[in-house]
Length: 239
Image 1: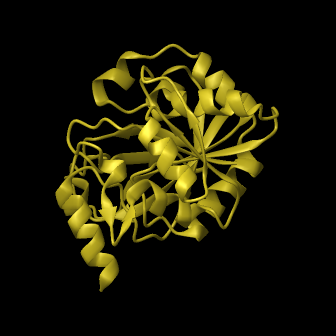
Image 2 (image 1 turned 135 degrees about the horizontal axis):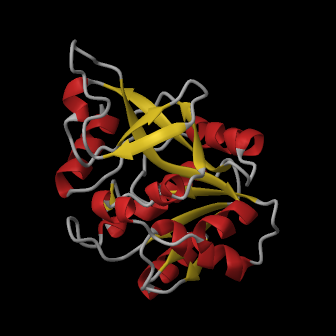
C-alpha cells in the first residue's frame, strides 16, 4: 500500500499539493508516479483534495487537521483502512511529483528485507549530492554507518569536511517504508526535542533508539518546497 500524505496548508508554499504541473495537480502527479508498484491512497485533511482524488480515480481518506507530521497522518489513514500488521506501507511525500517508479520499488524491497520492528522501524533512500547542493537547508542530509543505517538527519551540511574538500553528501528523499506494526510503534513514540529543533519527523525514531535503513538511489526528483522549486522542476523535466 502506498499512502500519500497531502496537507492543504503550507507556510512557504500555500496549497502547494494542488499546484498545477502541466495541467495536473501536484498530488495527482505524485500518485500517478507511484501507482505502478501498488495501490495508492491519498491521506488528507482537505475535502477539496478528497474530491480531487476521486475525480482522478484515486481513493482518499479524510484525516485530522491536527497531525504534526505526515507519518501521523498516514497512520490514521492506515487504521481507517484496516491494514494488517505485516502490510508494507510506503509513505510517498505529495511534493515528489517526479519520483521514479524504480526508486519507490527499491524502498519497498528494502522495507521487506530489513524493517524488523526490533531495531529498524523504517526504511528510506538518499541520493548523492554535491557540496553546493548540500548548502540548501531545504534539502535534508543524512549520514549512515557501514551497514547503510542512518546515524543522523539534518538540514545542516553533514558531515562537516574539516580537513579537505568533500563532494559526496547524501541527500535524503521524502520516501519511507514501514510495516503496519512498525508504523504503529513509531506513532506511539513521543515527539522529541531533536524533531522539533530541525523540524524533521524522522529524528523521532533515532532519538528513541531505533534506526532507519537507507539505500542509495539514482533520481532526478527532489522535494518541492517553494514556487521557485516547482518552476525549476518543471523546466528540468521538460528538457
